[in-house]
Image (cartoon, rainbow, N blue to C red; front, side, top):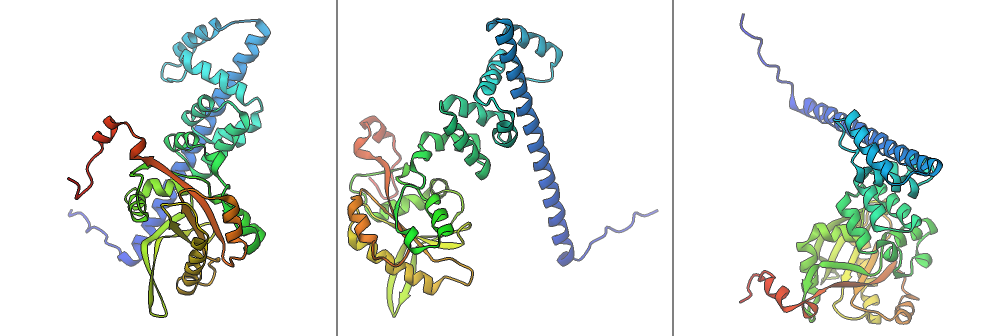
Length: 339
């Protein structure tokens, strides 16, 4: 008998169904992987706690860990986690997190690799907990977590000079302040000491993935050199973002020199224009982030005092060619048009 003809459903109804089912499968796979990871990390914590307890009660030294590694590997040859080094990591993990609820509700949601990074890179338990919460909330990989620790994110987040508390309602003000940082670290760029705003802007766009990572979760790039027409006059925004949690546009104004009071007035104007042109019902007031290469805190505070739009001012840093050894400068690729 001939095989029945292949069924071809109408695409307008079938494709949404297929997309829905794919989404359910992917979500189930993610939940299953998360559950497996959580159980594995909890198991490692329990093993580490048992080793700590036995060593304390029996007075055993590190030699017992060697014997346990040998016996557990022999009993469970398919599992690769019972080396002496990893058992010592489990012991340190249990010592760092004595309470099981901290593991169940916090670091247990991270894979084992990021947990080892937290142990090695940070000595203070409160900092480990802070970075663990951030990693869980934002889904950071081990590499991203390492980068955030290396850049000292905990010392920079929420540190901008701003007028948010005067302009925005408390819940919006706190959230807006928390998503910003000072200084912004653009070390993925290589700039000359006399770099202009356009050089910085070009570099940030060329490295947009690293730029978004440094700005933080929730920023979506709308465009660069965005044109504004105000009464027939043209103005250009350096960078325009939309923040998904704040539900508002964010104008980033870049300066290659120290902050001056007139910068705040100009950015205040830009925010009014963006509100008129782009803001839609449900959007919050547009925020302004002015990134300068140095600032005087007293000058910034005075400049923002009577500004009517929400503005934050922060420093930015980047690798400068003048501070690099000659052998590293020579290894840099030439920019298009050089030579």
